[in-house]
Length: 300
Ligand code: NAP
Image (cartoon, rainbow, N blue to C red; front, side):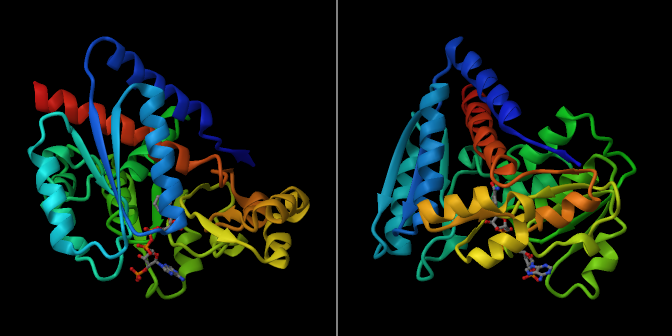
């Protein structure tokens, strides 16, 4: 089985963004985070670091958990009005008391570099994408980079979130794949996923997709990012590679695991994206690309 490592491609995308910025455009990105969810803090830190690498001006608005919807809306309106801000991202999930939909819809679609605004989701659904959510956009870059044939392929997307599953299915459809979407109410998930030559999994359940879900030779894209701290679960997921993961677990208290069982997938899949080292790296790279695009479109 081939491991679809994404580090090189992510670096190449960021290099291209950097080179264009060096030719004279200086985009600005505002990242908004509410509360102290440790995973969100890490994601935003990685995005800010990537901005520094490529030369995007960034600012980080880290707001307390007590922030109200109306306070957040005020901030979004200010960022919408500022000419030096080309892209606005609000790190999800927002705390339960904040109206997430109202916040997403308040962002100017021209600055919606996450591609979550209904205008951008609608344009994507109509086959006229402007800003595409970064994770599925990164997966398409990876498939193209490896020369994987999408046209006519039987593709299955497990998960129907606005962030990953739905836009992923739209992008594959646009490229002429035959797309099936599965979710928590799908009857006999394995029977459906086993028909897919291209299987994209975005569920949020560590190692749920096992050998019985995968067609022999299939290309499997694992979007899941789950923290696992139980040594027995690590042993059952990583087989021969468990020792390395157990060391990480001992050092950091948890290790990152996808939605696909990596040792079982290795027995049947043709290709698999690793976690970490796969889709996550591309998500950040595509955010850089979207922010540059926003700056170019706004200044055109
Ligand atoms: P989400 O909003 O929670 O959506 C999960 C989807 O999975 C839902 O559509 C749900 O179905 C479906 N699902 C849940 N349990 C299932 C089951 N047993 N069988 C079949 N389908 C099931 O999650 P998300 O935001 O899409 O994220 C999914 C995973 O990707 C998470 O691990 C997240 O951390 C990760 N992620 C990674 C990146 C990255 O850059 N690598 C980016 C975003 C997300 P229903 O709709 O029926 O509830």
